[in-house]
Amino acid sequence: MGRKTEEKMRTYHRYLGFFLAGIMAMYAISGIILIFRDTDFLKKEVAVEKTIKPNIKAEDVGKALKIKHFKVEKEEGGTVYFEGGTYDSQTGFTTYTQKNLPYVLGKMTKIHKATSSQPLFFLNIFFGAALLFFVISAFWMFRPSAPIFKKGIYFALGGLVLTLILLFV
Image (cartoon, rainbow, N blue to C red; front, side, top):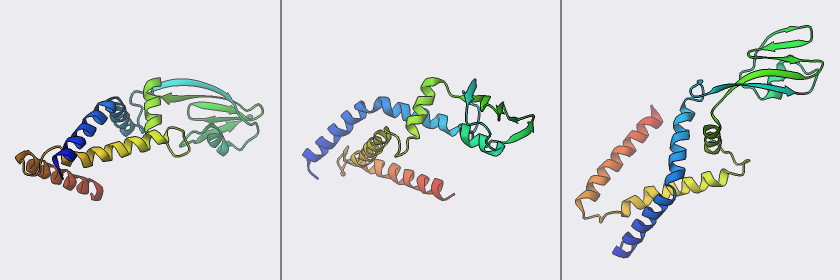
């Protein structure tokens, strides 16, 4: 590759890096927070009142409310009791508590977990492609004859070995 290609790759790498600095920080923060999604780390308890379809089976209340790991504790006098809440089967009125991340952190993790059915999934595809570009363009940051390039190759191989260990252990 010529010097011109090397210079262009460095320029694209630099300005794309500056452009994506904010979103990279957002994905880094939300990724760390998502590690703790099975805990109450940073979550606040919120009271929810909702009316859903009346007269549904006690086991189906969790599906209607979109509560994971829903478990009925007891049924008594037309009221279904479950962890943190109740459901009145005659009226459909439900009260329960749920634990949510603070608003901004909740929005960040929602973007991070976007699926193809959500409008923001294009952002995740663009960001993933940009990260892949960073991986590839990093090898054009220095001339292959430079000592720092050879040292960089050793670090890249070390990173590859670490990745393989993480994947298969």
